[in-house]
Length: 509
Image (cartoon, rainbow, N blue to C red; front, side, top):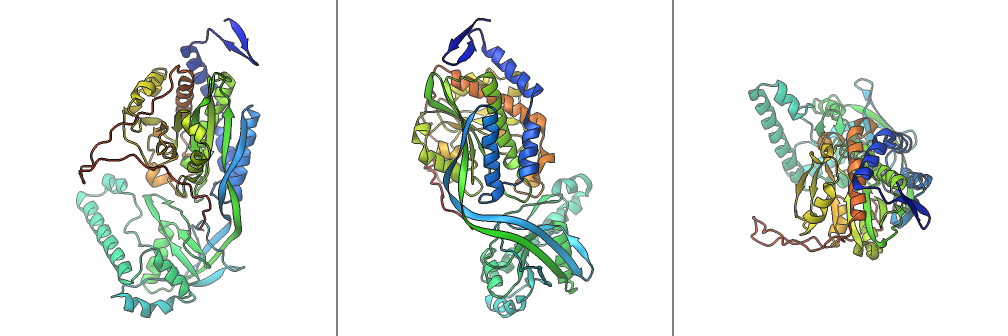
């Protein structure tokens, strides 16, 4: 091969696209850093809830990793958030028998007094109307209150479909539907909704709120944020919540001891991690490798969105090693506070109009550990021309799984690519295979390292590296012509493009 020097680096003039792709594939398969990256991020640092010390630690760790690889990186502050740090949670049934229960305090929940709280657990009774509820409400003083609907079954539907008789399955579904309707109706009769009733219970003197947000997957509970001001709010596993509910419903007067420790840290800064490989020929045109870095903290945020984050980090490592002098500037954006409304990426769009203006393409990965199986043109009229060109370089064993949709329709939500699409920039979601994402790992306590399918994540690294390389090398800049959107069949009105998102820079509980 003939080599020549451009500035500070050596580039092979004989390097063909096929040779570069082969090198990307070999590096990704033979020298993968995905497992150590996942271990350090998920096992050692842990969940990355916005406003927590763990999220700041994760941002600092990412900067150190990029710099190890020779990639310039920084943490760019975009706002502040309510700071909070999780401590231990112990939830024990102490009567009518003793057993430790599986559950955890919700994000931003106040802690219990030192030493914890011991009290009876009660359920919201069936009431005739709001007057009836107000008469009952003083009964919650000094007690824990169960506020979630009990489940008819702890088995996911597919388990019933496989083993139950048709009659039994249909009976269960009918009973569950009826219970759900009656539960909502009863909450409505109290004069409150499912959120405001928590405040009413707290004001009436409850010492804690207990919920169970079951995801309809074995052992999986969705863990979100507390809605209380001064008392703890905890989420129990479906199994243990059902136990407590039955004990209270049958009059067995269950008593609990809850110790929930946490710290209110006041206002804390929030960041995006931005890493940059400067372009050599068109430095003012950009390709962004995009993933949200924050997570909920029921698990460790493995598939939402640790997998997307390590995909983009590993892609950047490979590109820096094998393609160190791209024609266009490559940016890695690890965004903060996606879970609270795409805030980190929206702030970046507001703060960096020059990047949005010069964006050649953005590739975002978010929804789980699976291999990419869908790519939409997001409503850009000529997206087929350039995405189609770039995809031709992708090996068949990867591209054969991908369904394309051109020109597609723009998304105003979903994940961070929407922040750029709504600003008129060509940004695309690398949408992946489910692997039961929605009912087992998305926002649940089961979103942990062991759920990662590394073969599929490696597949996505190779795909992203090739698309980035092709986008950088493309002699043409991408078109931003927008497609005419279809008519809404329900209203008969023309669908419209999403308006630019505004970042919430001072968020919190």
